[in-house]
Image 1 (cartoon, rainbow, N blue to C red):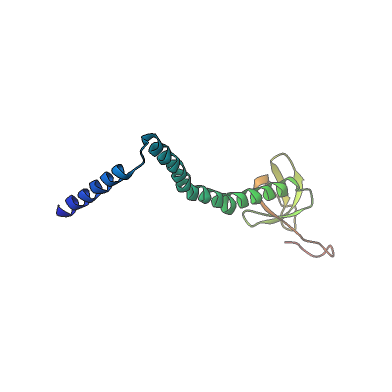
Image 2: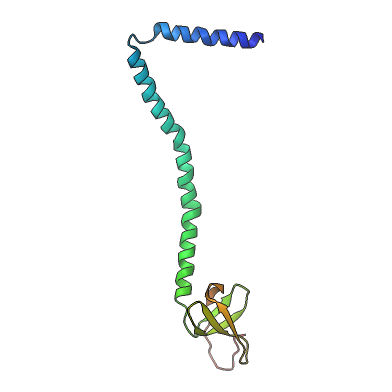
Length: 135
């Protein structure tokens, strides 16, 4: 309790000293404190703003680039492309409709219909001879 009393006494003494030695014009004191307040607020918000900028460049922007690249890949699919689905199935595109793709899987006449968004990647495969199997 003594500590709090001493602390309050020091704070009161500092406030009285500032009042007696302060500027003669009270309006000048409020203008200075208002200008200091705005600058103080801006400096206190600066780290928060920097965090948002860093988050944009480290998280949001790369994700947008990745999503754009994926959409371009899905839009450029064509018949005969060798693809890998999100389930890990490698197949060749037989036909493409609006949102569905018919895939040829295996050596026989096995076909499978998948959604366009289920294609993970287009594989770069070239067949050198017809007897070589892709599956």
